[in-house]
Length: 298
Image 1 (cartoon, rainbow, N blue to C red):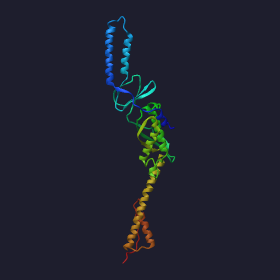
Image 2 (cartoon, helix red, strand yellow):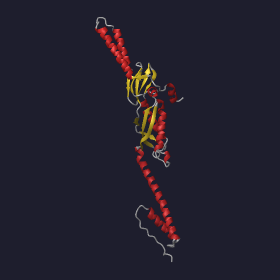
Image 3 (cartoon, rainbow, N blue to C red):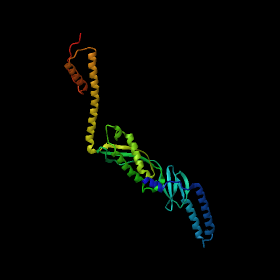
């Protein structure tokens, strides 16, 4: 049995018993009026033998009535326990009254934006990289958040770091297949990170709304080498495109010369012409080739 299933079997959020606080407040005011009238007629008029136990009972009644009052703002909740047992949760904003013998624990249901520390991990290829993530979450099950873990905020922070290490270690930083790399497929990596963190923190009753990489870079000790490697790969890719285009232009030129019978070229002249055209088109510097051709036909 997994930890998540065990948590679900042990505790699950339910609604607590509560009534509008205005009703409880009116009852408290009526009790206060009764107390004041009782003190005035029985204590002040006969100070020699005041019935203190009756006064204490009335005061205690008023205190109990007011102790169960709570004001909740939007996206707030209170978790109630009755002598150590979970009694329920109040999620509705407003002025409410609950069993005053219950103990309250206030929770926020608002969306929280958290940034993990920058971690140094090894990617799938074994290269040390630095990575950090932004995680957006909120409390979904107040009972689990309050009782399943010791501190759900600290639990989420640690599990987010663990999930980030796991995801970063299963992908290369960069690769020819962009769908598998951290840098080339940000959306897929973000979805995987969100799902992984969600699985880790489900026991705490937390919903992961979004998770994305906030920082991704090679570690300083290899950053210079990897930068030169990326520059070399970019130069090679550009050269490949230039060569492919140049070969097409040279082929087109030779075919047009032959088709239009502009000149008659021997095999050596054809090779020399191709060499000069390749030199002019491929070179990144100005060149002045000498093109030798025979006289035109006719």
